[in-house]
Length: 360
Image (cartoon, rainbow, N blue to C red):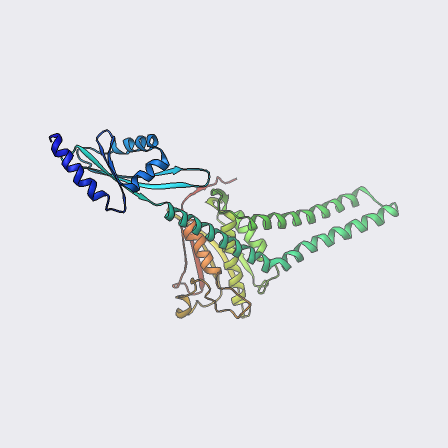
């Protein structure tokens, strides 16, 4: 291609580029700028020509005789508060002498997605705290019982000291009772703190499935409506470690067990069962109750936000939708109602990111 033809071609392309809203750049094969429109000029100025050119050269290395177009993404930090998210698209034109670059600014889209994720985390945490608030009276009661025992044992010890009747045997029994009550309080507080943590920004960690089930059992024993409904828990033997946000799995299971107890507590022989099944590709957790399933018209809507069959003041209608979001969006699993089971059964399926523990 002679020089005069190149000049005419560049002149025509330059006129077209000025009418386009997208950022466009034309370079030679060494990524030296030949033409760029106003939108592209703004990016080059904000990011810096050297950084810009260096990234273009790296991206252009992906082109070959068989690869005529390459697309990549780059993130640029402009200052402490601002970043630019650019999608690059580069291809050869004419007789392979030029590279055409198209730049798409996705900064607003990324910012909107980040804000949406933050709002989702806030909603998850708000619902978690609302659940804890509902159990607060029962939690206080659970702590008050061992505190009452401690107070009584201290008074008894003081009386024995005053009468000079404190023996070694009595002292040991006293210590054992105090330690048992203190351990109970510590366990409740530790579980409550774990449940209340906002884990939105935490990395997933390995956690014992059976310990998760124990935590659920502790909260399920609180004096909520339906607390007397028996809960049976079938643990996996040997135990397995689940890669997850444990507090979120516990929150989902507590919500399901609580709902199940509240639904069946007036039945003649109510029961709730929590069990698990380990498969090659996934871990399944089942929450089953003595109910006879959920009517089709309700089952179609139970995962919709704010849909509830409870009376005003008894439910917000966001519990099951939150459970679905935590399992499917956060843990990339599945959460559904098993409509083929004769009883009411909810199923949690988590990806097989687990390692079997060795039996003790």
